[in-house]
Length: 144
Ligand code: DQA
Image 1 (tube, rainbow, N blue to C red):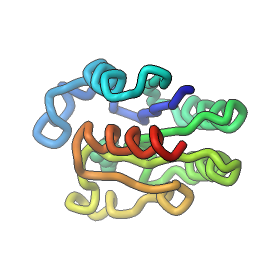
Image 2: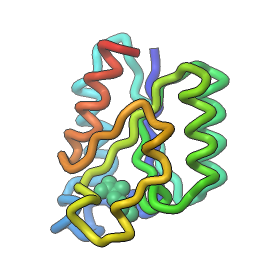
Image 3: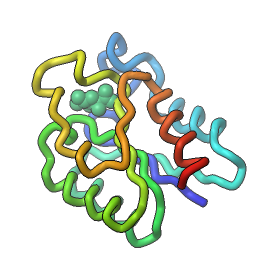
């Protein structure tokens, strides 16, 4: 079994990017944390891209391989209809896709209060730091 953990733009800079908001840990720390939380028979395939097209192609891969997705769409959350449409392909195919955020976007600037992805996601978890991903992983572990 495998889970795709996709991260959108600027999340490659985690650790040094606004640590007051996102914490001091980086994506490698997140990968290690999730790998430690995952059952032995579950592979965590964590990826990051600043490129909308690449993220979209990874969602096609999820559809074609029937692989559940945890996705932090980062700023694309708020305006990428293209990413939303690709996310809809995943959930309409009956494959789980959980939207996660490290911070709580609802407690921040107004432009972060809208997600164009949420309506086509299986569920949304926000505001718990890296535990947003871990909670999504816990769900998928028991309800893939
Ligand atoms: C984020 C929240 C977004 O508003 C922001 O653009 C990000 C990260 C989060 O994980 O809290 O890049 O998705």
